[in-house]
Image 1 (cartoon, rainbow, N blue to C red):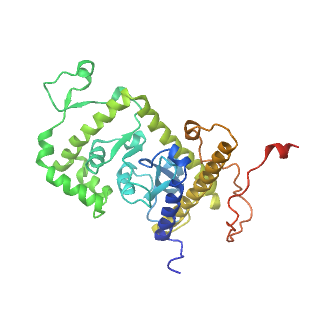
Image 2 (tube, helix red, strand yellow):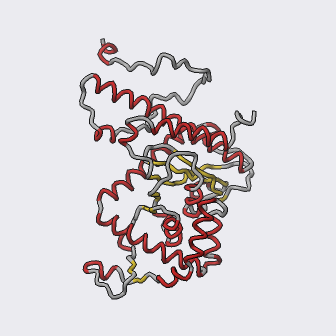
Length: 348
């Protein structure tokens, strides 16, 4: 019963198997290597009493709700997620979600929207070995930072008038490394740490060191964002993938009018974890048959290239019946996959 009960541990274990099985398909390699991930929140109304909810009139009017912060890799699979009370800043929880993944390779680049953009957050991501790549909404308001006050940066000279304090980074470098180890090992939460580094609106000395360290990686990100069109396209594509998954999540989570009715945090985590599991099951199913369809076309002589496969998406649901009766029986997989439809014979 403990192994079969639907809870966080069993959901994470099943997700890991789906993530690994989907990554073995040939077509998935055309979408990415699993080293790019995005993190974004999906808002849910919680009409029952729950301590892990919050108010936000923009999303829920006078009622309370919670946010499902989920992480999606470039292979379109959800690799982790957690529950955020109300609509607290997602950036305070993203690093916690990245360090608590269900499966798949560790992402090297983390893509977010503009709302997650801050110097301390950039510094924490950089010290933990991630490239933090938020989407920039307004480049005119951005700052570039320099480490050498005597250097001449040509056309960027007027944009890089602010200086990174390397002396503050050196003074706290040992503590910064210990923080990185604590975050990686899970002995401290990034959410609690960020709040301590900037308590009561004032940044501590260690917080200033992380902020200056983050400005280095942030400046490199801005320069690449401005100069590299492929980099900008990668960020936009990954965020579009996550938004498409969220639309599918709304289609799947239609029970109780799409609301969460769990009174405890564990219940919220189990329900949203089950939603992530259902999403990954759909993505795996679509990926499996897309891979088989591409191989079938190639066997028929149609020149399907990797560039064509890269434009295919497993986030399709026109063929899924969300409403109706469900039969949970063990499928007979001895005969292989289902046969493809023959358009010529159907039209006859």
